[in-house]
Amino acid sequence: MSLSGMISCGSCGARTQMNQMRYNLTGSRLICPGCVEKERSAIKPGTTHSISPRTGTFTHERSQTSAAPGQAENEEMTGYYCRSCRFKFSRKKGFDATSCPYCGRQTVSEAYKGNAQDLIEDSARSEDDF
Image (tube, rainbow, N blue to C red; front, top):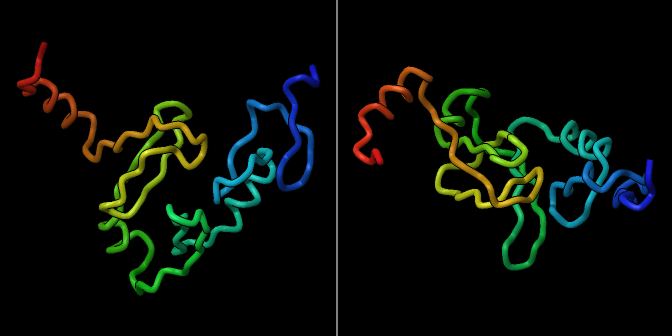
């Protein structure tokens, strides 16, 4: 393995191939896959993470809703996926996701909410055919 493409993890200091590094939750430093998994496993369901666009500060808040997981809370969420790394994630409705929280690229699309048959029928009805 060549050392030319290796950099140190911003969290644990381990030398890792550059193409395997990902940004941490705050987007402030590159970390190795092991540290990414540690960060993700430390996230508790019902918590909200956000970065202030002005100051760049990271906030971690516990949701105040009393809804059971998977119920009314999901009605306010919009699903997204990254076309580059295929990472799937969701954000509150009204929050436009412009970049992938996993790879950082700006290749994010809103996830289709219907089933495959609905998508086929919708594309057959499309008036925007070429």
